Amino acid sequence: MTATLDAHEEIGTFGYLALWDAIAEVVGDRECLVQNGHRQTWAQTRERTVALGWWLTAHTQGRRPGEHHPWESPNDLVGVYVRNRPEFLEAILGSYRARCAPFNVNYRYKAAELAYLLIDAAPAVLVYQQEFAPVLREALAELPAAPLLVCVGDDSGERPVAGSVDYEQVIAGASAPPVERVPSGDDVHVLYTGGTTGMPKGVIWRQKDAIPGPCGIRVRSIAQAVEGAPRREWLRVLPAPPLMHGTALWYAFNAWSSGGTVVLGDNPVHFDAAEMVRTLRRERVSSLAIVGDVFARPLLDAVAATTEPPGHLRFVFSSGAVLSERSWAGFTEHFPKAQVINALGSSETGPQANQTRGDDGGFTAGPSTCLLDEETGVLRDASLPGRGLLANGGFLPRGYLGDPDRTRATFRTIDGRYLAVSGDRAEIGADGRVRFLGRDSTVINTGGEKVYAEEVESVLLALPGVGDALVLGRPSERWGSEVVALVVTALTDDELKTAVADKLAGYKVPKAFLRVERVRRFDNGKPDYGWARARAQEGDDKS
Picture 1 (cartoon, rainbow, N blue to C red):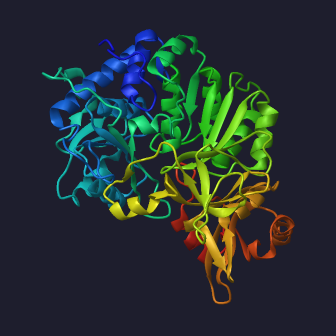
Picture 2: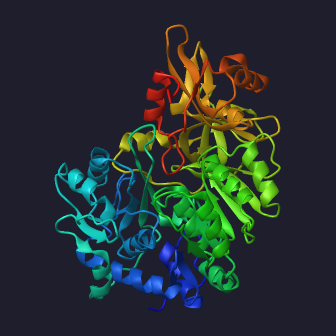
Picture 3: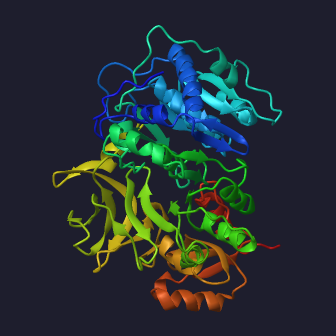
C-alpha cells in the first residue's frame, strides 16, 4: 500500500496513520516492534494492521455521520484489553485504519469494574488477551449486549470466551473491503483514566490534537518527518509502564513519529528491574519512559548491582508520580550524559510543565499553562505568583465520554481562552517555577488547614532509609481529618517527624507513621487508595 499524502500537510491537521504510513515508506525494513526475540519491521507492522483494519471495517460502522456533542465519540469504539505486547499497539493501529476509536482496558480490573467500563464505553469490538477470559466472561454477564470479541492467544491455558474469533486468524483471513475507509485527523482516541480515586472516565482526544498535545510530536509536517526518519535508526524507545496508560502509549507514539523502534519489556506481567536493565543493554535502548520513583528506584538499584550497565541511554522521561531527589541523584551518577525530564500533566490536559536535571524547586511551565485562582477568577501565568488550579490551553480533548456535566466543568472558556481546568493544584513561586501541590482528591483538610499529600510524600521519599511512602488523611475527632503516612522504613517516628518539620510547617507533619512492608500500587505506579485507607485504620503491619 502506497501512501498518497499532501507532503506539505501541517501539524494539527493530519492523523497518526497519515504520518506513520509515510514514514513506513522510507524505513520499511527497520524494526518497528521488538519484544523478547520477536522482531517486526515497519513494513510488517503496516501489513498486519491493514489486515486488522479490513476486518474491523467489515464489522463496524467506523465514523458515524452527523454532528456530535463534545462528550460523544464520532467513531465506533474498540476496546483493547491486552498486556504490554505487540498486539496492543497493533490493535490501536488497526482501529485507526477502520476509523474506529480505540480505548484502553485496565487488565487489573475485577469483573464488576470491567463490566462498569464496558457499559460506559459500549464498544463495538473488544480485543482481549486469552489470559483474561475468566474475568471477561463474568463481566459480560452484566452487559445488556456483548461486543464482538477478538482473542489474542497466549500460553495461559484459559478457555476463550464463547463466540470469540482468533486474533491471528482475523489477520490471516482478512480481505480488502470494496471501499477502504480513509482515516482523518478528526477521528478520536479515547483514553480512560486510571480510576484510582474514583470511577474511570473516558477522555476523548482527536488525533490531530493528541499528536502535538500529549504525544509531544513536534514535526511541522509529514514531509519533515519523512525527511528525518532515515537518520533515526539509533532511536530505540522502551516504555516501561503499561501501555494501557497514557504515559507509555504516548511515548511509543512519539518514537514512531521519528521513525524509531518501540521495544517492550521481556516480561509483560511484572516489572522486573534486573530484567529491564538487561533489555536496555541488549536492545541498545536510547530512550526510556518510567513513572517516578516506583520505577526509578528499583531500576537504579539494578543498574548499581550490574557490572555491565546499559550504555546507549540518552533520554529518560518520567511522568505521573514523584521523582525524588534520590532518584535524580541516581540518574546523575549512573547516566551523567542522559537527559532526564520529569513531566507534569494529566489525561485531560496533556503536558503542562517540565522539570530537568538541575531544576531546583519546581517545574518550568509550558507555554499554555496557567493557574486559576478560584476565589478571584484570575488566571495566573508564570509571571504572577500565587496558588490555584492548574489549567492548560493549546491542544485539548473534546470532552469526557458520555458525561456532559463533567465536560462542561473541566473544559471552559475563561477570559476568552479555551482551557482544561483539572483537579490538580499548584503554586507559582516568585522565581516563576511551578510547584505541584496535589490533586483535589488527595488534599487533606486538617484543623482548618489544607495539606497537599504529595508535598509531604516528596519530603519523606527524599530521606535515606525510606523505601516508599504514601500520605493520606483519616478521620479524627480533634482535627476532622489527620495526616498519616504509610512508610517502608526502619527510621523511628522521631527521625521522620524531625525530617518533615525541617522542611514543612508543623500542621503538615503526619500525626502517625504506619510501617508497611510495601505501598500497594497499580501497574502504572499510582497508589491503591482503597487499600491505603483501610491500612491507615488498621495501623502498622503486624508481621
